[in-house]
Length: 93
Image 1 (cartoon, helix red, strand yellow):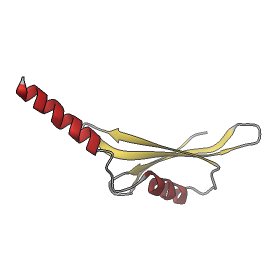
Image 2 (spheres, rainbow, N blue to C red):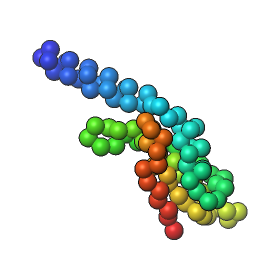
Image 3 (cartoon, rainbow, N blue to C red):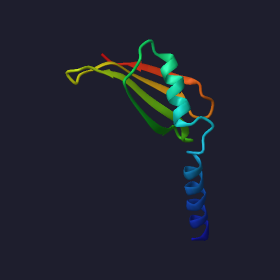
């Protein structure tokens, strides 16, 4: 039983520490803005630990909201939260 409690404590500590990243959400947004060829007026940043070892990434959604409410140039830039490198750029529509 003690081993189980210790295992849970280690997993919880690792999970909590995973948000302690080298790259902040503001830095990830700046990196993503530099990766697109338009000036977004709508930005959303989400923290995404991915993979079996929960590597930290920032998913930065950039778009232009038109006057009629539709979104144009919807682009998601996935930024490695440890290195600041761009892992993926996905454009929709």
